[in-house]
Image (cartoon, rainbow, N blue to C red; front, side, top):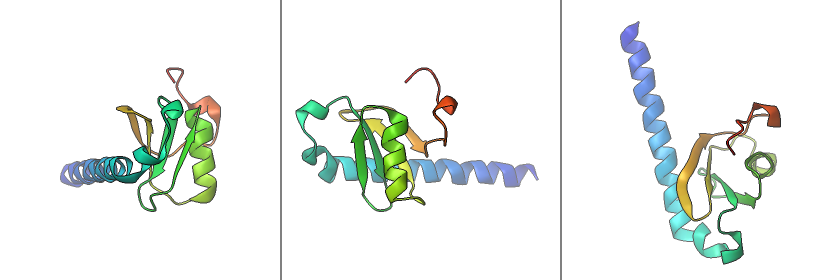
Length: 102
């Protein structure tokens, strides 16, 4: 049983690494060049499976807009111009579930 859990953790970690690498490739290859300097520091949500993305001022609203177009997407969130606030996954359904450190 412990081996199975450890294996699940390794698989999850690998999926997260793959998601980050795909997001980085999409951002560096195309998305970054489509965004303006005025959008630096804005929140960016990327669906790594389709390459579709959304830019906005809040994490929640930006990811929600992308989710409306890509309901089964695999999302990576970051600030345009920085990977330091990257996140993997999806936006919670309610704003209350976000942390206060946005």
